[in-house]
Amino acid sequence: MAELGVNIDHIATLRQARLGIEPEPVLAAAIAEQNGADQITIHLREDRRHIQERDLRLLKETVQTRLNLEMAAVTEMVKIALQYKPQTVTLVPEKRQELTTEGGLALRTEHRQLITELQQAGIEVSVFIEPDNRMINMARELGADAVEIHTGHYSGLKSAAEIQQELIRIRDSAVLIKELGMRVAAGHGLNYHNVQALVELNLIEEYNIGHSIISRAVFTGLAEAVLAMKQLIY
Ligand code: PXP
Image (cartoon, rainbow, N blue to C red; front, side, top):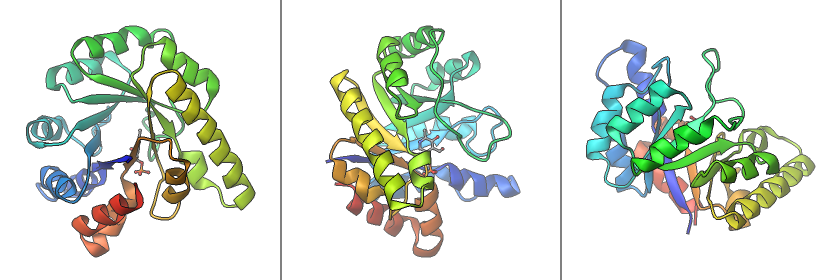
């Protein structure tokens, strides 16, 4: 049974549009958890465009499942993670001008120290990378506990043949990640239509999904949107 991480960044995006107090991410997290979320995922960006440090603090206190903090692999963010100690940190690439996380993190040997520091504080470390053997082996060498496969390319494809080819790449990557003893997650661009084929691979242990759930929630309410996604992930 795979697990669902609900990314609630867009709740904070809406609040920041007016720099006000609603909608409240803490409330969104509680509703998501009550409707089947196994984890709450947030991205504290360096430019603080949506999630704020205050959200991280309150969510760490109130989330009853697990809190997964996505963040850039930089010293400033490591300091913050060590202060709040989420259950998991997912290291992601970050560029100021991007609309959302574009592409996977290019792992380098310098990341080893930062990964170790987080782990010594009892935080599980996941790395968000492309389904690429070289990067997966590097994740193992650097001591990562988990790998989140970037599914952005997969979710952008239109032709059946290309989708099939990318599914094979993701499947082979998931097999390798597990063989190397790491937990395998996937995320980015997943929705109610394209997640099914990944679930059928029966290899991915966790999905982190935000945009499509929050978009559906605008029309159906968050409870129903989370529940519907949870039913697709078995
Ligand atoms: N996983 C990671 C590592 C991400 O950076 C994001 C986007 O913030 C997601 C999952 C969720 O992507 P989406 O909002 O497209 O579902």
